[in-house]
Length: 182
Image 1 (cartoon, rainbow, N blue to C red):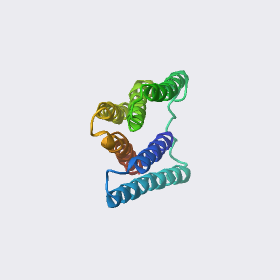
Image 2 (cartoon, helix red, strand yellow):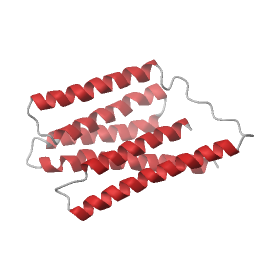
Image 3 (tube, helix red, strand yellow):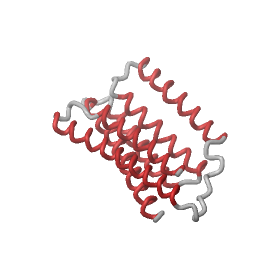
Image 4 (cartoon, rainbow, N blue to C red):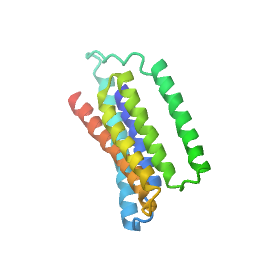
C-alpha cells in the first residue's frame, strides 16, 4: 500500500505539471486534450489505490507485505530538506539573474528529478531513478532552452513532458502492482 500511495502522489504531481503548463503556444484543443488526459491518468491511479486498499482489506489470510523500513527516516528527511532549499533558492537565483519566467518550470523539473535519483538508493528502489533521470534531463534541456528564442516552449518540454513521465510511470507501476497482487 505504501508503494501505491507513492504512485498516487506521483500521479497527482504529474497531473498538476500538465494542467499548469499546458498552455500557449499550444492551441486550445491540444491544451484541453492534455489536461483531460492528465486528469484521467491521475483518476486511474486513484482508482488503483482504492482497488489495492480493498484487496488488502479483504484478504486477511495473506500476510501483509512488510513496509519499507526507514522509508521516511533520516536519509529521506535530508533529501527533502535539500530539495526545498534547492527549489526555492534556485527560483530566487533565477529571478535575481533576470531569467525568463518559463525557466522556473525547468528548474522545478530538474530539482524533482534529482530528488528521485537521490531517493532511489535511500529507498533501495531503482524504479524511481529512471523517471528521476528523465525529469532531470527535461529540466536541464528547459533551462538551456530558456535562453533561446524557443523560450515559449519550455513549459511544454519541462512541464508537460515531466508530468507525462510521472503519470505514465504511476499508471504503469500501479497497474503492475494491482495485477501482480492478484
